[in-house]
Image 1 (cartoon, helix red, strand yellow):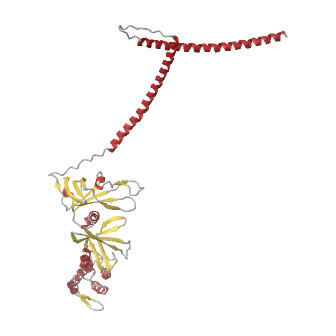
Image 2 (spheres, helix red, strand yellow; image 1 turned 30 degrees about the vertical axis):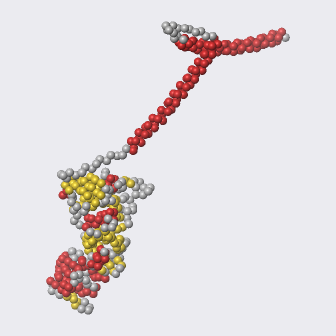
Length: 441
């Protein structure tokens, strides 16, 4: 029992001591905080006292008067100064932040403005120098072509590097400038399926071009008309001259369509070949106002620009056109008939017989401008040719048929046709003056 009581007493003592130790440590912490606060207040008081001394140091002889203040006043001043210093620090921080934030957008705006000004500056295109007295003027008889490369967009008003369709990819269109008879047009070609090429106008202005013959040429153009054309460097003798309608027929039609729609006349003839059908072609026949008796012919197709016609024979029966149905034109058949008759006369033949009557060679080709034979006459005529030997037939073929087969039947097949149009070496020939007059009105 005594031991139990002793232990109980010790337990109470220990509880009390632990409580005392805990309270002791708390009181120590509070005292430490109070000391640190006092140290800070003293520092502030000393700084305020120094400031007060400086303010009151103004005197006649520069003497310094020290004014002592009470503790209560010092505490108040220290609190005020503490507040002031705090607000000053906060204000400084805010000002610094504001200046920093405001400077960034200003510099960015200035840079953007500089970039925009640079973009808006137009490209300076150097002026084309005018030809001088030493340069050679090129006459209108020359046929000059130039592949447009670096100056393509200038000559075509920006129609070179572009897309053919709305959602298509842009690409450079091969463009060819042609100068002829004081006129200028551009052929522009296309890639892929669809139309092959088209003719476009030339921009107004002065240009320097390099011809296909490597000649440097100055050209001044207005509304498709070449006002000035000079050779600046190179050899003019290398350039071609206009010698055939085949060179200019398609380009001349394009020029009139682009620039002179009221100064020319054109008509369409839709033709086909019954024996070798390849579709229907539209033949464009046109003449110019200042040259009404000169005709040109071109083929117009949906997928291609107008093309020249080198040789074609169009057959007309009344108001219907059955074009390209003839292997030979009337003029070709006329030459074959006359040549064959004269050669047969050399061998002693004077004519031929048909079922109805006898025909004299001399009467057939002397009184008629164009010799025309029907099917019965052709059969009698061929019976006379058949009497020739093999050697004489070969000689006749060489002299009258250009080493081709002696085909007079094909001429007789087309006698029911009235030739409406014949083109030989791009030169258009008509057989009836009425057609000429009707078309030229």
